[in-house]
Image (cartoon, rainbow, N blue to C red; front, side, top):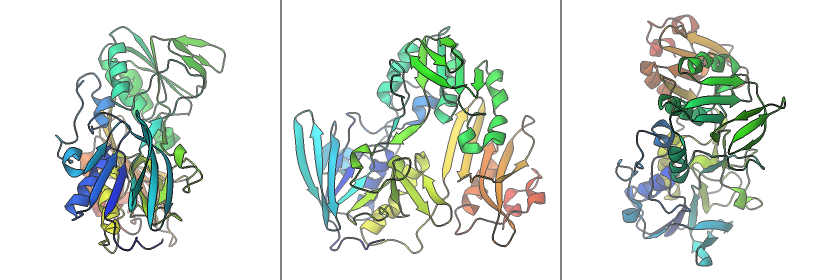
Length: 419
């Protein structure tokens, strides 16, 4: 990594008005930045919380303002706040950056000492899928809310986090729901097919039809076509097949990972990039000494990672730099779920508790260099008391050794099985 700019920046620009951008602005002020702060956002709305868009789509129609939740108020934090404004280009070196911005009045250039990319992500919709809805922002939520009526048929393409949360809310509102998943199990790309398969019975329990191993070849506002040639009619079709970092405009300017994210270290510095640029939140992939390259797109990362980024930018970075374990939470199909850590391929799954008979946790284990079983990640179902010990243990410099025999006994506190 290259050293931070010298002298320290007096002009900082943040691109993005979501949680990551807002928390970066709040941390700058909290950590003593007294220079000029400009915040640029493509949306016209005040910063709002995204998880309620799916979890509470029909029960909480008004946006949850992040300022009201105590995360900061951009109108107070920023010297200049530009909404309805997008970035078109970036030219940067170690000493500063120039952004090309565009709004309804046209293009302009903005020079700055340092720029923080917090541009987030955008939902994936395949070419030719006309009239298909998504659920990613306030406008998406408003369109869906107006379309979901009791008795209507909703087809959700994708059984990931958003697909499952939307299906849960819609089915509870009397909507007939079909979920189509290309993989062998719901959340299979996150949890692996074995653990993902343990979630499949929940769909039928909530009156939701789940079809796995199904390829959708075409989709429109009134239905989808499957690879076997059949057509499934619907009143509403939603694509929930993932998101892509909002970084296409940076191609050729900054290094990007395979999924199109900006690769960063623990302090948000761009790997092999100019010292004047940082990235945080959904648009970045984080290089962890413990876990390797960890994809972004986690609410908790947008909340917690800006603190170290700002400290480093202001020349006050702690040693060692915190490396919190990735953490995702969800409410779906009558259950409270969390994933802690980064699930590695090929891990052995150790079950703590019996799925279908109460709360349970799946532990993902790989042998360490010393041959000892080391815990890399965990998935909890209705078992909140495991979450705290997992987040602490998996945020250490090394993956902890797991006493497998003790861990499989749900009556033994999990912290007693970790060392």
